[in-house]
Image (cartoon, rainbow, N blue to C red):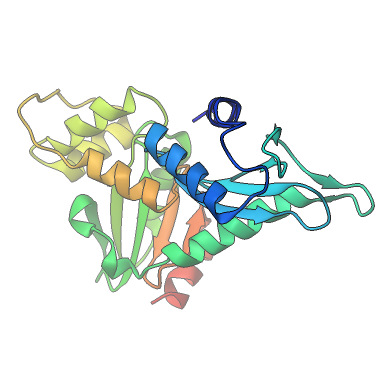
Amino acid sequence: MNFQHVFFSIFVGFLFSISSSLSQAAEDEIRRLINTRFPGVELEQINKVKGIDLYEIVIEGDVIYVDSKLRYFIDGNLIDLSTMQNITRARKSSLEAEAMERLAMPLSDFPLDLAFKKVNGNGSRKMAYFADPNCGYCKRFEKLTLPKLNNVTIYIFPYPIISDKSVPLTQAIWCSNNREAAWDDYVLNGKTPPQSNDCTHPIDKILAFGKKMRIRGTPTLFFADGSRVPGMMAVDELEKKLDKSR
């Protein structure tokens, strides 16, 4: 979503129909307009910026600023020159941390029926990871790290976000007679599975769940206690994390 286009459309078109102060009525009107015109965009917060005539507006974790008369909006970093603090970056970090805390859930609450399952040893420790089959880091992770783990159950969520080519590929893997083998054949050996047009698959559900969980890159790892790690981990580091998060 291009937020500049969103707010240009909303604020210029309704500049003189909305109150000049950010009253509750104005806030309600902004929320209504966004929900009506852009149903896929969630306006999360409207906050006054301390010390200056700006209001912080949060949409899907992104931060922009408007003045109290709704005459201007700023899409960029707000920096306090007296301290050289990047106020926007600090707020985004805070908002992201708050969101991650709200979203945290134990692995047992994940839709594990949407994942491929691999078991090493007795499978007593558990983890999940979201992977695009065309993700180079995911391929390295599966070749060099996952086979070395002991006594672990690994839930692999196919998460095609790198390119449009990943979506039909992931669907074909899911629709194979042996999904786990088809996944390994492609990720480890580069063997593409045959396409299938008559198979029901849950890829859209996985993408929706990933979006809800704010998974923006692959690999993203999750552990039994609900903690997450974006990116790869070394074997020793991953072993310690699995033990700690039982």
